[in-house]
Image (cartoon, rainbow, N blue to C red; front, side, top):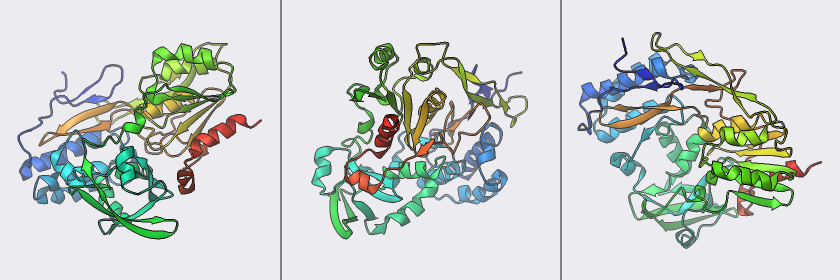
Length: 420
């Protein structure tokens, strides 16, 4: 008969763990239920995680290592950090503790500075402000390299927190840490930073998480289409809608090149609709793997899925697709589909390396977590998980570029289109 605890979603085949008890009343479960959390998680990965082969260590040994950690977790925070540390060992950017968690938020800090940080050339660099007015007030400017926060070196902070930062690869762990290291439970942060080779120190204010919107830059309200010049169109997929596409391609059909910016999360699912404009014929771009209820732990490949259609009127210019560590999941899937168009080049840096439909489940204490529930591969069965969408041309931002207010990835795209 039917399995009570797990089923596979129709069509997609990712697992649905429908009847695992949540135990919401246990903020800090007793040792037995803490071990249940470990055993539940361990088994789900063992039998239903498509990328168990990429874990890079013996998953059975991880179980042995974590039994004492779960038994010895002294309070709610230690329990949740131990769960985070376990999740981090599967190296999946889809896997984390999701939802608002008061205890973990106090661990990271419930207040945040207005400064936007990114890791550029492996250094913590100011790249902008989450709030223009509050950011300017700090006196920090683009290109400042932060080396100490509250008397702790940034390197030490990263070493300490990396194990609690689940992600498919190191650039994506740094991406997630970059929004967290300037958090605190106090109203001030003491920073040491390097500007023009000189070390400076400043106290800057920290604001409640309600006052600072760290996602503002992705929520661009203006049009998704702009012209860089009469020959080059630029499309930002963070504010695209399928209904815009016919109008957009009418406007750009005679341009020499189209830049598609996927350094964001697409605001609409455009894989197949946009693909129709960029391809002359149906082209395979992806295949999946799915688990099995009869033979738990076995994964099988599907046939390839195609994008595009017979279309003599397809866009004939060069297509350059921009990616970086914010390119995740649906954005990576979009890049996979669009890169098969005849004149496409992908440029940028390592993407988040987590693609495919997710499966959610709870651990005791109402801890919500997810995994990538199906495997996503190129038609030749090459991996996408962890390595992400590998660019044809690697371009990373530089500190000098940040100081000069340049988008070096975009500039490279323009050069590619303009070269004869």
